[in-house]
Length: 86
Image (cartoon, rainbow, N blue to C red):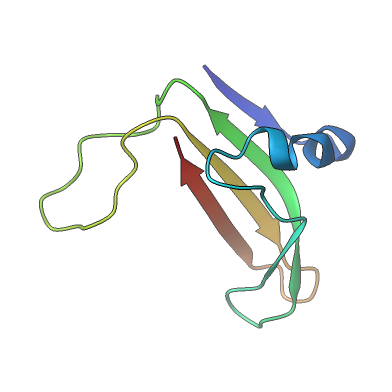
């Protein structure tokens, strides 16, 4: 099952609970302008539905349950992503 969390209070409760390899952060450095991007959504793929067979030409590819956190920069609008897997 894939659970998409957009409620701010639920996101804050989920930062540590849903991360497989350590807590997710409330903010990340924007990938474009390096300002502080704010967490806006968490996608919890506890059954590994998103993962696919790894292409031959890549070293890292999701292969199990994972959590994806999307962050949006309030300065430039860029979306920055953090993820980890079980």
